[in-house]
Amino acid sequence: MVWSLQSLSELSDTEFERWGKLLEERAGIYMGDQQRVFLQTQVTMRMRELDFERYSDYLEYILDGVSGMLEWTRLIDRLVVKETSFFRHKESIDFIARHLADRLMNSNSDDAFELWSVGCSTGEEPYSLAMVINDAYQWVNKDPLYGITATDISRAALSLAKNGVYNDRKLERLNETYCKRYFTQLDDGKYQIISSLRDRICFHQGNILNIAEMPVVKVDVIYCQNLLIYFKKWLRESIMNAFVERLKPGGVLVIGLGEVVDWSHPKMKRLSAEEVQAYVHI
Ligand SMILES: C[S@@+](CC[C@H](N)C(=O)[O-])C[C@H]1O[C@@H](n2cnc3c(N)ncnc32)[C@H](O)[C@@H]1O
Image 1 (spheres, rainbow, N blue to C red):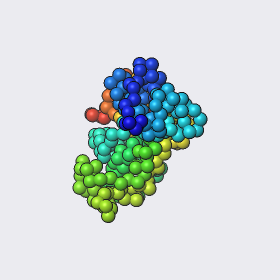
Image 2 (tube, rainbow, N blue to C red):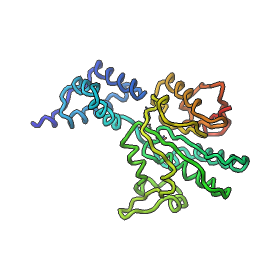
Image 3 (spheres, protein in one colour):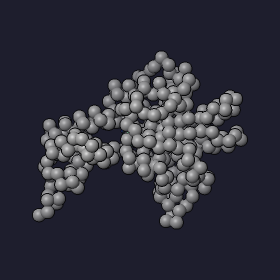
Image 4 (cartoon, rainbow, N blue to C red):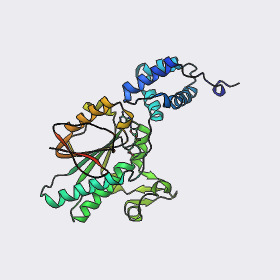
């Protein structure tokens, strides 16, 4: 029988612990027992592709040098959950639109509006934000002056995000006006985000655990949803604290509803918005 068709043995408790520790240390992601089968499936698939027979040999390979680092970036692409959609949490996106419209109507500042989408996956989140931001500038009849930085640990996700090409199923939740205004249909039937919107977004690879090394200047909005949930409580809080240092005064932090509980910070005030978990920098 060809080796690749043979089944690999199950991850032992010790091996599962070692792989889990690596994932948590390097990406913050905590794998409980429920994710054991998923972890084993993804690791064994990659091992088959590279002709490794033993988990320990593959782990040693990953821990060793530049080739190990490259392999790690491939494996992590398979281990992270990249699920996302346009306007995934509409209440939060609408909240950003209202926040910007208020600012444009009530301030004479000509400063650019800067937003950071953390854990942007394949781009649907930052593009949805770009759509409502662009609309807000149109409502007040001002030239759009904004930039979005979008970061993710997964290079595969970012490469799709940069292209901004989606099939019609992905556009199902979008209203027709957005489809017409912000997409062009390609010859193969797929849809691409128009270039004037794509050009507003700078996609970068970045592990949020290395936030101190990330080249993001202070921003008006940090938008981070469905990422912190994969981390332990202490890590969620430590990342929230680091976000505070990346916000301009008056800046806003929006996370997924209930993703962090009982967090407070002397420089941040929780905003009372229904169905949205947002804090303003005071
Ligand atoms: C479930 S998706 C959420 C996407 C989007 N924010 C949304 O709410 O639809 C989580 C994303 O976080 C990314 N991610 C996981 N761990 C990360 C880390 N340590 N640093 C940066 N991004 C990470 C994954 O690659 C994935 O694209």
